[in-house]
Structures are given as structure tokens and as C-alpha cells.
Image 1: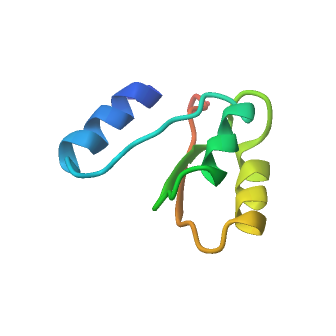
Image 2: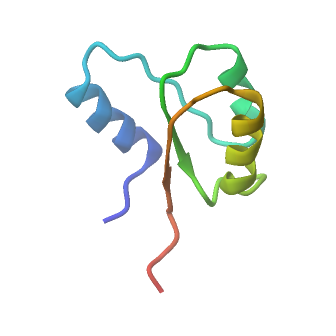
Amino acid sequence: MPYSRGGLKQILAREFPEAMFGEAGTYEDMAQVDKEPWEVLVLDIFMPGRSGLDVLREIEASKQELPGLVLSSAPEE
């Protein structure tokens, strides 16, 4: 069963009530990574505007040690 970004955010917020969450729907929205002290990044490989793997490479090049979890919203077939 696929989860929406908002649904995943709700699940994580319920499990980690002290955590702060942000979200980006497109590559352009990812600019906030440099503005906030993020502890972990949950990234969709198929995000609009640019490959999530490209985004991950850029973040790795600019952000020291930001751990990430890469998800896929692609259908199984």
C-alpha cells in the first residue's frame, strides 16, 4: 500500500512526537535543506523535477553527514 508524503509524516510524527518535520514536494523545494538543521532525510527516488538520486548526490556533496532513507513511489510492475 503506497503512502502519501503527508501520511508518512503523520506516522513519523506519531512515533517521534518531539521531532520537527518539514517536507518538499519538488526539487526546487529542497532548498530548505540548507536552511534547517535536519537530522535525517526521507527521499523519494521519483520526485518531480529531478531524480531523487541526483538530489541525494547533491546533498551528500554539500551536507556533511545527513543520513537518508530513500523510498520509491513507483508501482510494483
